[in-house]
Image (cartoon, rainbow, N blue to C red; front, side):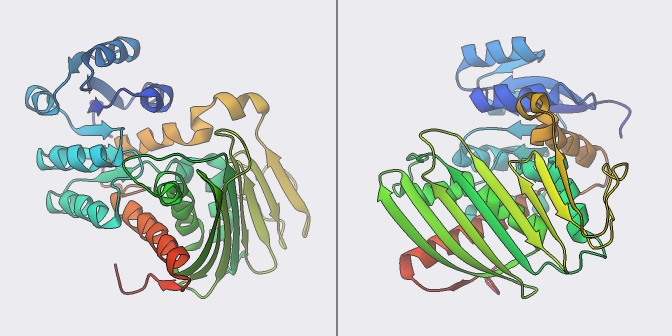
Length: 349
């Protein structure tokens, strides 16, 4: 790390930023929150006072001209991520943007290309890659004893979705605004997606369900059950199961891990727990941690990754290019659901 903290300007003072991102930054001593910026100046002033930022702006260009920054954190709409992210990169800053980095994979690619052109690092807010339980599952999947990934089964449910960001089709917005997380986690855990075949059922406004068959580049298959049906609000249920060679691992709601091993091997930090061959190992985070820990949610890990990437040669755990690929999967699912045909993602990147 550098001798001084990474100097960050934060753009966006909305509810998600104040609930998740600002408090996560305060847990990373390698980052100095220099300034906050929002077009709503009173909101920016309140946020700066709450989290200890030294300067307040309601104009991005003024912040960029006035402050000596290393990186910008941008948390708002996809259009904001793309537009303001481009300006920050062109000004010579590394950037972190919440997901998605743009409304389309084409614009997301432009943002990633801008980062490469200016030799700056771009991180995208796929926090599941930083969740301890998903990281443990990834270590299991990557282990020699697990062998190749052969099948993935993913189930995600929540309540009805809404029209956002000017997207008329609610269930297309669902793919871009919510399920892009799942698509990224699929790539993170199982590798590149080769093709998808999707069906969509919409029983009412904002309610819908996708059934998606996936073929991976290594020949493995997957089943994704993705719905906005099963609650009357933002209550999520997420189960991610990967099958390898005579073994399987499953993550539920980012807090529970189940693993059946043919060898008894366990990744850190679980090696202190005894496990027998062919025994199903279960790990559950304590209830208090489930509801209150930003580390468990992966948000602190995102900010730690930003500090590490800015201060060293480290590459992002979740990059702008990763968001391009996740959006491409969502676009293929939408196209397949509309046409009734399998859609290939090969040779179109």
